[in-house]
Image (cartoon, rainbow, N blue to C red; front, side, top):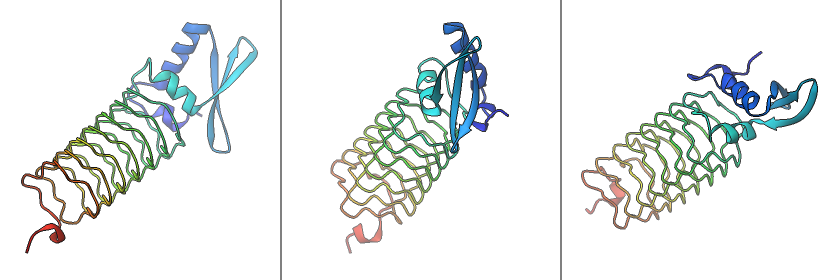
Length: 219
């Protein structure tokens, strides 16, 4: 049975894998699971060559194949290298992306709700209108990242680097930005009324028309 993450994609990744490996090395592949970890078993003729984890598969594919719309719900991707990957509208809800490298990755419109991105690198990435509601982004790097129009409701952004990030119109209701770096971030027209900004660095941040928490409004 084809796993969800291969079957439920706009551009079938299963076909991409088959074409990529076969055209390059005349290698065939089959999938199986061990302890909930998805494994690709590769064969040349009748001889088993080696196996690849889902992380290794994605790291190879992202350099050659768009992964837009891919289904990666609750998949273990800790430490994965997906730099500059096209993950537009991907479903990464509940995925484990601790220390993942997503530098300059395109996650526009992606669903990362409830995902664990602690210490992940999302620097200079595109998360336009992405759903990160309830996500763990503690100590993540979102330096100069585009988060405009996205959802960060209830997300943990404590000690996160948001230097120069575009947060215009982002839903930050109930979000924790304790000790976050918001230096030169754009928070214009953003509702911060129910956001924890205690200890956050807001030097040079654009707060034009932003709704501030009551404890930050001079009485």
